[in-house]
Image (cartoon, rainbow, N blue to C red; front, side, top):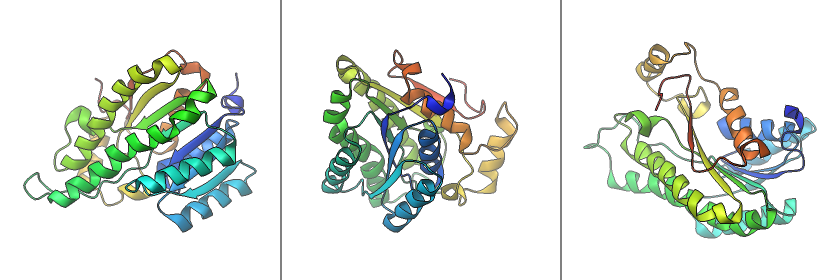
Length: 253
């Protein structure tokens, strides 16, 4: 099976697809033969990104999505299913950080709640909304973007680290709940990736990753795409409930 046909005919939704990792996943999935919808709170940008990918001859559409709003989630999923005629794969990529650099004592309660609302509750509600279509697919796959931060206990990043640890735990629970429907649920845990959203990260944290990775270079979005495509494809149909760190050997659980 060649990579350009790995997801041939699959219908895939990717949250947070307007930029960064989500954009890279959308391009990779579409190049592998999938029909893709990217959904993002950055409404203007998600349309521009979808148009960029469509201009390359890829089957990519863009929709607006606010993971903090259950009604927005339902509307987005309904529109996606109507647009694609069903759904075979969901990539829960969208998340926020916002609490980076603050100690547990400095972190505001409202910010902690906001991060968990989007990253944890949003992932649950998005998955729940997609379940009828994924069940009907007969080959449904959910891919949750976690992080390696809960695997090593990143300091001064408590809300984000807690939220991604919850995503890993939910991945295992959902895998057991949905296995009877033939739906796989797996998590990908990237390290610190060089994208727009991580430009604010202090240089010392970037250097920590460079110094302690087994592979001595920066991590870029393409480094994560292969794991996501694998988790969406038939190659992983008997793998579920797993968390795959993709971080150049920074964490080896």
